[in-house]
Image 1 (cartoon, rainbow, N blue to C red):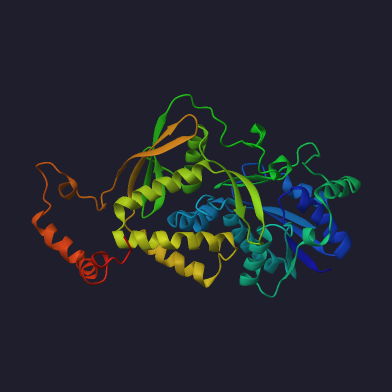
Image 2: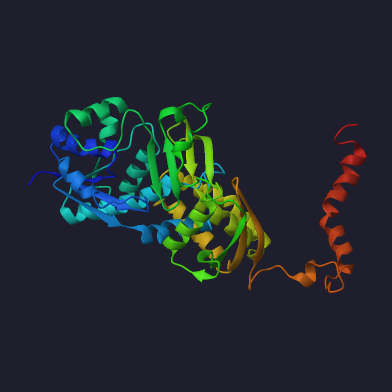
Length: 402
């Protein structure tokens, strides 16, 4: 038996070429593993395709429920969006894929794991760092960082060796997809001035002709129902994704700062993710105590950065998640979303049996129970420090000039 390697296999150009290249150039026996995180395609043919390119074994692992439960739920709890916009579609699937690569390597006695990431991208960081966190003894092989081929040359390599690939020179997009959304790059999209062609979109193609509403139910921060029907996470995410996408909601076109130090134009479709995040943020507004909500909002960008940078298995990410999880105990209730053709989504209602909104305190009508007489003393004490400063050093003394 030769030295064995487990490859994260997607069936795309780079990983299809990688199977053959790893065998021919480095002498590995390649085991190809495709992890189903909700790509939406039929992954059934992938093992046969991998075997046709030279793998000694190949199989698909259905990890959709695990992905939703163990990765998407804590990310939604943190309202995670990198640079305030991107809900971390690709970044979130990588730690789970690596987990299954490592488990497969242990099962088959492999000495290394491999991926098809390039030297310019973020995914190489995520794969490598996660592997070192889970299995520092395993070697990591990244053919696309080593073989020195351009995308055109990689296609040529596949054609020369008659490898089954699904990409052509006429349409060269790199696409990654899972339950949480879809990312598209390469080709004409590398020019940030060019508008994305209509044919790059699949999940946000408008079909609804009238506005409609959906109601998302949460229990302890976890989405559990849609329009009153209890659903499993995978089904619920899929349904809200289709509903929001039907009005064209969920497109992102942005230039983001990659971990490797370059700027990259990225196009995303994330209707379900962005709709659930919007609903969750709104429900937290009703259910979280003010200081907890403010501190959580401060930590949310840090969570997003850690996930984006491949530090899912880091002690800091676990610590931040522990705090976030502790805030979700009472984030329960329903949020009403209105979806409007043309890409519109707005929260139009929310209710919670444990919410902190008290009508008798908030109202200005006869049901008002707020003790207005307490306000004067509170405001005076609240501003006492500023008043003292102003009298001695501040505005009265011309501290800020004329």
